[in-house]
Amino acid sequence: MNRLFTVAIATTLFLALTPMASLCEGTNPHVQNTSSDKRKSLIMEPGLLHNSAAARAVERAREDKINRLDHEGSQALMIGDYPASARAYRALVPLFTSDICYQEDLAYALVGMGRKADALRELHNAFYSQGRNLYTSGRDIKGYATYALLEDEAGNWKEAVLAYNLAGAYGQAHGTWAKTDNDGWPNIDIVFAADKPQPVLLDAAAHAVIGTQSWSTTKITSTNDGYNHGYDQEIADLQRAVTLEPKWSTGWFYLGVALKRAQRYQQAVDAFNRVISLAGTDKKLVAETNDEMRYAVWMVSRARHEGAQSAGISTSHAPAP
Image 1 (cartoon, rainbow, N blue to C red):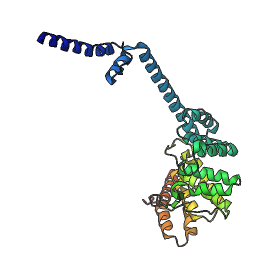
Image 2: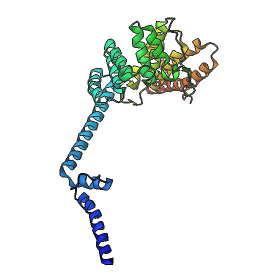
Image 3: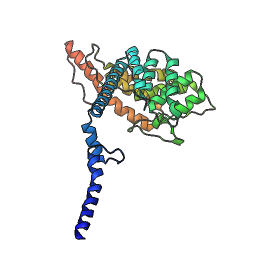
Image 4: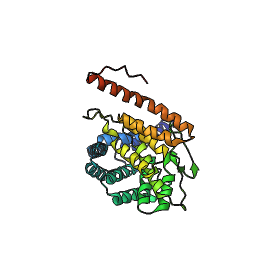
């Protein structure tokens, strides 16, 4: 009796263990693999290993291509080589579909080439693609302001107003008016109504926003005239703003800051003096302008002192700021 019981137990254990043995060998397709068994089969199967390595190689090649084109496009855009930048970003757009940032950069390059209708089409397609709209696309200040400028120039006033009022911290974000002091600087806080066209002022404001959001972090010092030409495009946008609105003190302020950063100190002083003459009772703007102007004035005085010395004329030392 005991012997029969023992044989029965042994037979049961053998039958129970048999599927597990066949599972480890990969011969029982009706038994679900464990995570460990899946890893083993992947390692043991040459075809799967090859396919995985090939997939990784393809992904690495794609990432390398994106990084290369991104570098080429951004560098070309920075130095004003807009055709080269547009070529790079056109190649990038289909490779990077999860974000519309490269479509925006392509639009900036097209604007630089004077192809504003093409730029507007790129931005419109970007903002309204894949079920998005201006509210849900969540773009940055420069993207919205550029779109507002192009829509206004195309005569689409209401769309331009909506885009400008969504221009980040300078406008209305998802229905809530949000202002910022921009690290203590004056606000570009012009608000537009859809039923009251002010195209000239909107164009000026859009150019100013684009200029302030485009300030280059690359310092170009090896120039014959001593200026930093990394700010040329920003200065051009801000000059366009004050040309459209000559009495706009805030626009002159940001132009002065850009000129100072570009080491064009006398021009910066002239712009700051214009701010003070236009600011009226805006004490905050006047105070910030004086702070910004102090260094520019000192640099102008220093340059005159050094010029006089090189000409052999004795002068007193330039005062420190």
